[in-house]
Image 1 (cartoon, rainbow, N blue to C red):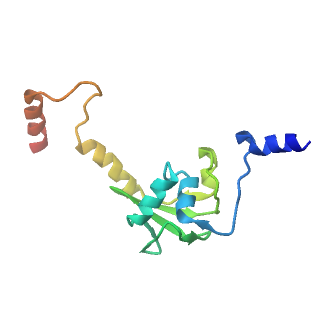
Image 2 (cartoon, helix red, strand yellow):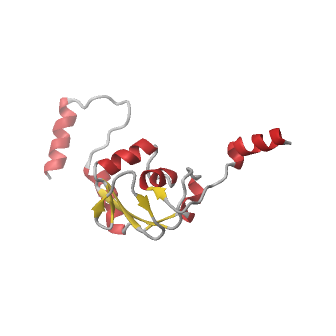
Image 3 (cartoon, rainbow, N blue to C red):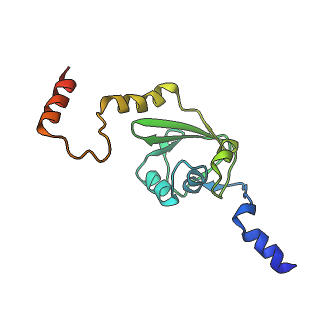
Length: 142
């Protein structure tokens, strides 16, 4: 019986979500899938890209329910409200239960603008020729 219980607890399919009273900001950002790794979340905090109440935060800062977190991922500043605290990484479908994205349409429009400004080449086509580069320069000057 004990062995069966041990197997069930350690099976990824039955992983239990731990909701706590206090959670570090880097851990929460990783858990709600803002950053792919916890070290990336910690680095963003150290570089001053994470703001709470208009102040840059350290990775060790504890967050509370209802706080607004501003994340600078250039060119966009994302606004996320903390609904619940969680330490474990969540499936993408459950992120909405723990975080609410309040980023304005204007901010998200900056992503589309960036894609329109830069010329994209098909992958594997290689470096542009001199003729291609001149044609691009003419398009950009207009």
